[in-house]
Length: 86
Image 1: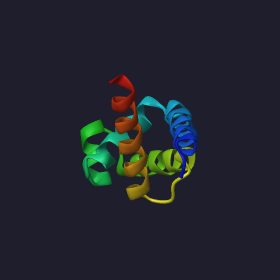
Image 2: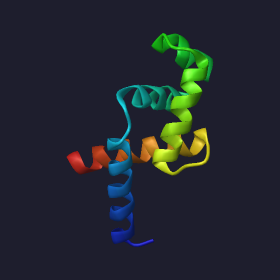
Image 3: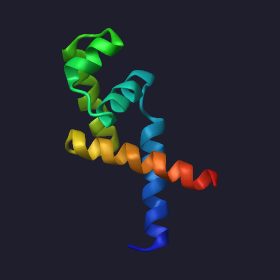
């Protein structure tokens, strides 16, 4: 993978994350912290089924297939933003 490929992927991730709602971002933060849907639901004061719906939507927007990939994408974006700020 070239540096250009990485930049394109970073831009794609930034665009995808920009399309997430605030609640979807909070759900993703919970997933990235290793929380279960039940724990995320409790923390956000919403139903577990609502968390599942948000997960489905954000995984579709991020073009990932599972929670682990979603968390990795979140970490990649966070790491990329930290690197860009230096």
